[in-house]
Image (cartoon, rainbow, N blue to C red):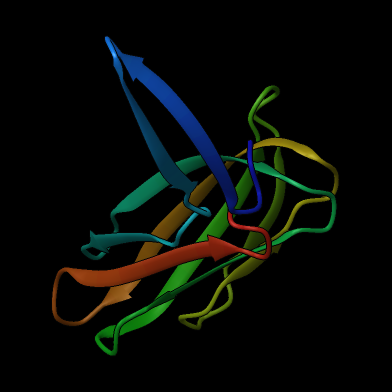
Length: 121
């Protein structure tokens, strides 16, 4: 998985016409979703060792929780269930993970959430 933006140049021959294009591979971006009270969403991603995954939500959200699972074993490896709207979990090692974001409290449903990581999972 690419962690950095990369620019590639390609030349494609169409009969006697050559077309040159430049394409940019975008960096990973925040996941944006809408969750109601009690709903959750799960993302998969490749994380580096000690890479932090963080989430936040709009002003109508009072509590957002996050759980980090090993994608191969399903084992819970970190969680943040503090009563706040800015959970953070940290990958204990490099590999594939499942990131579950749970809307624990949303006063005006649904609430908008944003999830990202240090390196853009």
